[in-house]
Amino acid sequence: MEIQFLGAAREVTGSCFMLRWGDHRMLVDCGLIQGAPADEARNRQPFPFDPAAIDAVVLTHAHLDHSGRLPLLVKAGFRGPIYTHRATRDLCHIMLKDAASLNEKDAEHENRRRQRQGKRLVEPLYSRKDAEKAMRQFQSLDYDVERKLLPGAQLRLQDAGHILGSAIVELWLEENGQRRKLVVSGDLGHAGAPILRNPEVVREADLVVLESTYGDREHRSWDDTLTELGEVFRAARGSEGNILIPAFAIGRSQELIYFLKHHSREWGIDHWTIFLDSPMAIEATEVYARHWKLFDAETTRRRKKDGDTFAMPNLHFSRTAAQSMAINRVRAGAIVIAGSGMCDGGRIRHHFKHNLWREQCHVIFAGFQARGTLGRQLVDGAKTVKLWGETIRVAARIHTVGGLSAHAGQSGLLNWYQNFERRPTVALVHGEPEPMEALAKRLRQLRTSVLLPEVGGRIDLLSLPRAR
Image (tube, rainbow, N blue to C red; front, side, top):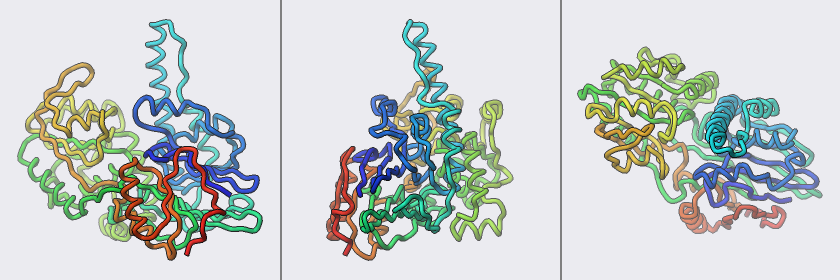
């Protein structure tokens, strides 16, 4: 009875863990490897196992670094069920379809270049048909319901509070009369975030596979974050320009709409026109609205009082390219939420072209900006940027607002772990080496056994000391 770490081991991408007990094989997650071109090229390598031999997959949530290789897995011969929360299934229908469309466009662009050079053409990583085929293997589950998956395997999902439908995985495995419990945290949410509930407490485990994305830092308090956002909006009110907010389609966009709705008058933006300019974010917002029963108590109370959480008189959904282009005729009084979150693609770049050089305009960064992205250039104070070969002067005011992360910070991770009644062994995943080591140090101060598995590393569950 063992777990093997095939992704997200000493890195924050490509989540994939294989469980073996008896004659059975099961994956938890099958995510895309994201990052530099050399990293992403690893997605085209064959799986280090026979996909046809996998009995089932359990998916923690819809983000592509956890779900994005499922179409590849099916394409390579996997025929079993993919178990996940029903809201995750709905979000994956959006995410995997969009990823497949981008794959096809990228392959089409690359093949035009290769044709001119007389080189062999490439296939997309996977197609929309591949994504649709994978979706047919999804089986929807609810939180807090125990289910037998296979002989010797019981599953229960708990709310992880990260994005809609995100789950902590509880697995009970049995082999030759011996039983062990494995808990996979998935991505744990930032306690106190709007809309979603806090991560659910789990009390018992023999091994906890724990994410460590922010294992070395804390987030700003929600009160401080809202104060900072309010100051930016009030400062922009008299500048006779627009406000641009690059945002991720799932999670961040919905949080921003929530804040804008409930602080509209306080922040002096009730007469501004707000545009959600991202087809994927619009679809995701509709999924969130359908699953309102998953909202936290405060959001549910406000929904009863104020109606639809994501409906505002001055909020417009820009679905088409023509609607998006029309926004750029607005010279003042527009708040534009658009993807991509790190500005490395999407409609936000078009809005930058029309607004970034204007001193009256503002840009709010409400999420992490990775090295090498356009967003990071702006956060780091670039005076000019290039868009489609044109040099654009940066005159707009750039604001970086911390505290909106969808991941738990160090204390959040520690507090969640300390709810276990005993001190089960911890395997840290989904983190760069520095935050992982920092979290490991804090956990060891709790007299916890901490493992930092490498890619391909295995842990024999039966050899672990029983939690005391």
